Length: 92
Image (tube, rainbow, N blue to C red; front, side, top):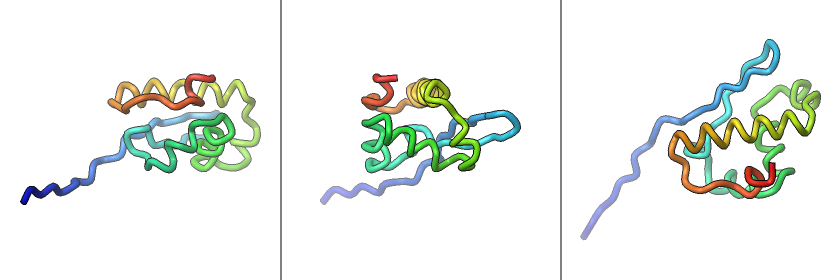
């Protein structure tokens, strides 16, 4: 019988700086399948990023800001070796 043990990996992060605030957002290599599926829509993608920021800061961002954040996250995830890309990333 064959055996496989899944080893835990260190999370990959994007450091997001907004004004005086700094946030850690997990890259695609470090998120669950459920989180990855949430990125398939723009609303889902925005909700994903908002949960890693202070509410006041997240509420003050424009859609252009979110587009730029999603693009930076996508590029960092690709460099980290994430498979594929989400629909929300292609739509931005």
